[in-house]
Length: 547
Image 1 (spheres, rainbow, N blue to C red):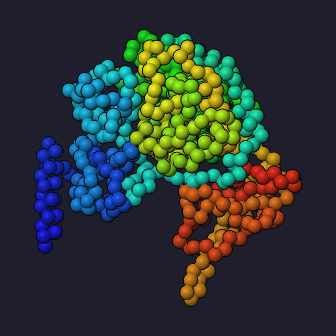
Image 2: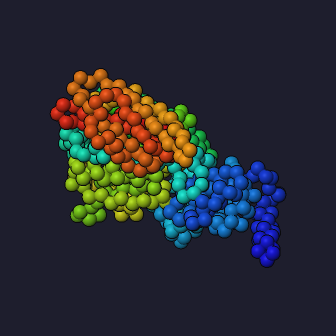
Image 3: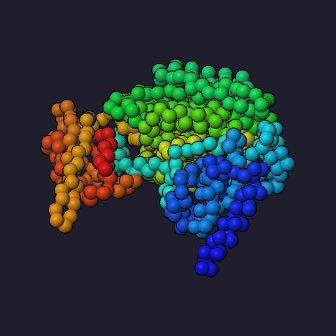
């Protein structure tokens, strides 16, 4: 009885707070913008009634949208949450990253400023005058209005799992590609972008830089196109372009690997001088160099090289691209974001690979490739709060993505300054990062190999029932027209999101395999590889799932 009275009292207090938070009483369909602390009770959020919609994951919390009723239900379950904005619809909410409260006080009178985590703030206002007042060193992300993710349990996003172990072994063709990285090309690419003086989104110089990147892709023989989008800034509308170059896949062209970087820049005098050599001419030059090299090879999967626009105004280019990719149903296997890869604060600088939990497999692949093909030290960091670059909108849409950056937190004293110029950079380090990123992209895209990968892979299951048990049997089938192939290996992921393991004890010499005694309620993933007479094993077939 006492417990019930406490719940009733709590509900009354919460209702009073909600009523005071609205100018009018909320309708049942109104959404609140919430901060939900991560806790062991989070798996109970599914019981709150309806969907609690994830907007952003951070290290210690989620930003989410939920109805007033769901907020009350979450609170009564003991899930710590608070209202950030009682009427968020139609507003632009920004994450501001990398400033103390003292530095942020300059914009506080012009809108709403809420501390989320250390040096991470949520901000919104009725106008856009705050842009001119923002500290130059901050990173900005425009929050998505919604994402396909949901807060159910502790998982968020699409976990594609670790790749089959053979993909991580050194491959001579990938080693050959990594060896073709040119320091002179990287130096020239950074210099060419720096020469535009500023690449601030909203300026004609930015559009001229985009045209130069487009021309550079075309000159390398890589098919390129403009991905055009519009955005609003300080009350005016602007049109700009992501630059997208593509190498079509030969075997599985519907599966896509992306290497990206932003080409816009900013500074403490952005309309006049924002050379942005490290941030992020360095990443853009690497993307163009990787495209030049990979274009001389063939891959099973499609590879796209994207230079994003308007990153400094809230990740607008990558946000647009990722949202359109989801609408089109694109199968993006992984996205590698290169942002600031050429400044070294110490003699033996490492590269930080930033990931969230569902993209950790891609970070591990990057580490393995860096170890196989370079001497570059890597530091992997699982940091959902690191949302200030173009990998983050891909996280928002459920895609696996990682960011490569010279240091996180940032250590470049010239960051977002007019002094961010080429003479401050370490091209040897940039070349090693470019080699590691190229090797990761090429490994994930899979060079067309000898032997050829199996095709037309299919999985069909049956359930066998007995008096005391039920068991699943999966019949796998595939095709192979390569005359050098003498057998096949079958790999299975027994739990979605875990690494693949070979399940055949000897080479399979037919085009079928029966996997027996499986748990009926469990989902399984399979890939097939081919082996030739010299013992060489192909890359992965297309992945098939059996539920």
